[in-house]
Amino acid sequence: MSREATGREAEAAFLRRLGKRVRLLRLVRELTQDELAQAAGMSRSFVSLIEKGSHGVDVVRLLRLADALGVSLLELLDLGASEADRVEGLPS
View 1 (tube, rainbow, N blue to C red):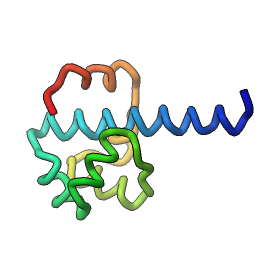
View 2 (cartoon, helix red, strand yellow):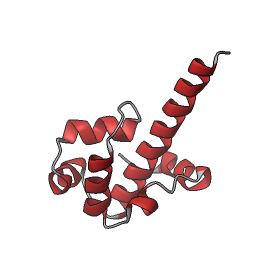
View 3 (tube, rainbow, N blue to C red):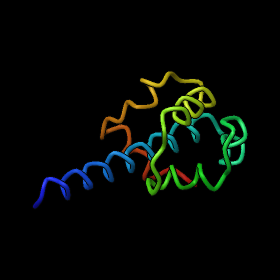
């Protein structure tokens, strides 16, 4: 496997874990995607893409998401596998 392909796989894995983390934090705070999007100054569809792990996010948007979720950027990016995996059984 090429270095480029390995890098793309790592990026995709990161985005999936980030999406699960955003979704978990949103659900724990009992926010809808619409509410989170409005608080973060982005569209609901963009929040949905982030949660699905199918779209990259720049640092400014990460900061906005963290603020809207009431966590620091470091807390938002705490993507430990065990916590992210717990999201699987939560409702949408």
